[in-house]
Amino acid sequence: MGLELSVLASFTILWVAVVPSPGPNVLMVTHVAVTRTPAHVGFAILGNVSGMALLASLALLGWAAVLKAFPWLRLGVSLFGGFYLIWLGCKLIHRASQNPEATATAAALPAATGLADYRKTALLGLVTALSNAQAILFITSIYAATGILNTNLATGLASIAIMVSCNATYLAALGWLFQRQQVRAGYARFRHWLEAAIGALFIFFGGRMLWRVW
Image (tube, rainbow, N blue to C red; front, side, top):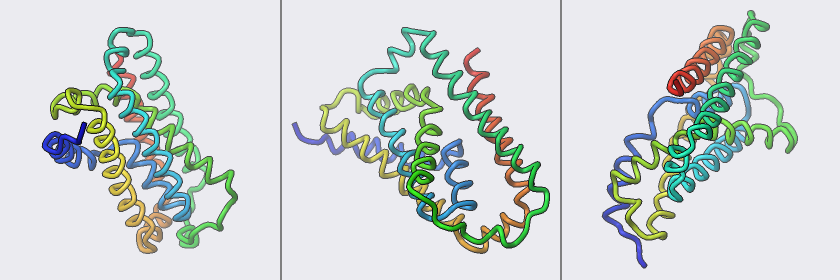
């Protein structure tokens, strides 16, 4: 069966409105952009949208019903995601406390590293996306509201492609913006405070995820 274009159009409009919402994915890409190379940004985005594609696929397969039917599974997913984000935030705050004196030289791009480091950055992007595995419920609600759940497989797969494309484009734009030398110089000047603030935001998102469990 062919694509149901009217359904895809509705989904695209709604998803484009959702994409700019602030969250862990945005924080992760922003931090990678101001501290690492353009290649690292690319790998971080690749890992992140791969995680989003997996969550969207699970939503399409009806995993929202599974999470609702098995509260212990939903609890485990939420605990993993919440504690991961809190751990990431604490790590950034600890690093900020060890670097009280930021210098302008920190704005320079670090030297290129090996493939193992790029894989590590891609894994960071992947796990950051999967840390919010309850997003399956949110994506399912978007699918239901736009009629994706009632369409054929081709239309469902096309919706995942649209979702990944929108997220990748938005994150790439953020990465490009925060890779600008002026932005990096400003970040280097206030690195101590900004890393602490980013860490606090990760802790906030993680704590909010844990709070919603109860």
